[in-house]
Structure formats: structure tokens, C-alpha cells
Image (cartoon, rainbow, N blue to C red):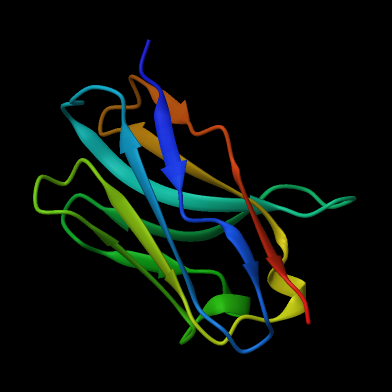
Length: 117
């Protein structure tokens, strides 16, 4: 079973920046889309940003122009750079890998991001 290992969460002041990364426990072939989701207390999990293997990106309206998703050279690691953070960005952030043929889907364990002064 593949584990997605996330890192980089923490506490930051409003207006600050954080970077998240997600790496699988072993090499995965045929990844179609890598994405970051988040879930705040009392809210449903929502997609924050996604990137296809070809590099096409998609962002939630609430994070456009503030967050950037990218993958590493081996396309087996996905990053999320978060700038101009707001208190409403506070949530547990999860990474997600989907197979190009719908043959698998993996989730990370989640990493807490807290934006507070």
C-alpha cells in the first residue's frame, strides 16, 4: 500500500507564507493528477489546487493568485506554495494522487495549517 507523506504545515501569521510537500512512500507510475485538498472544522473537504501530469493547473477561486502548485522533476512529489495567508486558510491540508486511468487514488494523512496572529 502506498502512503503519501506530507510535510510543511504549521502556524503562521496572517500575510505570511508556508510551503507544503507530498511524497509517496514508494515510486508510483501512471499518476494522472496530483492535488491538494483542505478541510476546516465544520466544513466539507474542498479542492484547493490540482496539477495534471502534463502540467495543467486548476485552483479554487479563494486561493487564486496566492497559492501555487507544482511537482518535482520526477513528478512524484507535489508542492503547494501558499502566500498571503489568511485566517480562513486555516485547515488540515491533504494531498491526493489519482491514477491516469482511474485505477487508484491515494490520500495523505493531512497536515495542519493554522493562520493566526
